[in-house]
Length: 620
Image 1 (cartoon, rainbow, N blue to C red):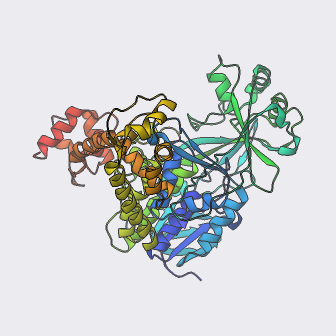
Image 2 (image 1 turned 60 degrees about the vertical axis):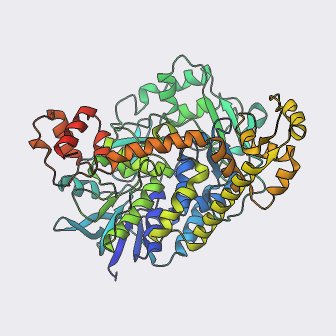
Image 3 (image 1 turned 135 degrees about the horizontal axis):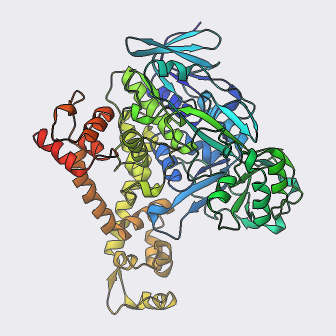
């Protein structure tokens, strides 16, 4: 019934979709297995993509040839560039999406991907032979052979849904849990643990009083996520902001004795940076209100996602508390919020390719690795799909460094440090964030992906045109001498100091209050010179000029750090024979098996003196 595949991907969430698309586009015959074809790329929680650091990841996925950025742009109902008041390294795109359209566009793109097949069934076992994964076993009893398998099970592995004192098996509300895989992997020597996540109630937008809320419109200038020419939306839907109050908190507290979190019925640890509303009012008792976002679920639905009100309290407590929130006095609830507890496998059991150390040709991606968020899952899926293809085709592994991408930071953090709680990406986790901006993801990564065979020729041509444009614009700004008479009145208007002699335009651009678009309007001949170039290319040239000193400093730091990254440690290296290493260091290095000295230096508990000892022992 089934042919042998190069790659089988288990699970069709964000990680699974990117993994399947990447493997197939690279040339592997790929099978995507999901328990429900109607929930491919389901936005299980909030209907949004991007945000702080997460937006950078989506742009990196797009630059590498993934689908997430394109699908996001095609289903956007509101777009905002966050942190515009800060430096470009902090700018982060975020889109509110039409939940149903997002799923439909993903499915449409996957169905139009060559070499990609689909099958609806549960996978409850793996085929293992001589320490190598050779396929899967499905709930209907089919054995499907493959050269590599990628597991992207999300929250479905032995998932349990909690609402108040009620709990039942499920990977999402109204969807059954996946069983069998955890037990088999544990029997093979894998370590597993439990995590939890939650979601807020969904409510009826027709029952809300928006006059009591603050409107949050989208940006006038929609930048979007994809570096391709996907259409940008002309109209947008607003989100709204309201707040809890002390009366809301008091009502919620009446249900604490029935809370699965406080009663100890949940063993898993929840996400630190996206706590439930009961956790917030418990941990931050001094605060008398918490911000809530009213987020539409799409163009043609009245359903609303109540961001900031994740909860697993009893339904009646949720409902009573909701009706005490300004604007929600007459609210109708579509479904209550709930918590879900699920199995994950600490990611220190993986190599940098996301292949497991215990079983060859078996890859993990997404929440199975302890991460949270669509974006974190999608980028892992992309990398796992690429590397599964590379492995079965006997090609070199594809690994991104911390200095090359947020994706590299995420994977390095997971492999080196592991996680005890759902891992979420932040700009603060990236030490080279001035280099890893959302605006230059295509310049950083498309060439690498094109050489791999994933990014198309059209993408590469567009990047080459952009690079040429940036060079030309920088030359224009460097050669344009500005007379005091043509600029001083404008300086007065922005309360900046006048000039007394000619000054090059690129020097003027270095002033903190001067932006390239304003400068061009102030100097008509500069505006004319920039007419052939698009806004994105002009902005990129200006960023490179304004932040050149900081960018160069970071490049120097990368160069120094790369000395450790380039020093590879043999896979068979025996740390136990180095007597000068402490017991803790020997144990952690032996268990972690770092690939380079750089990775070894980031393992928790390894200090600089340990690295010096290793360098001496390796003759460095």
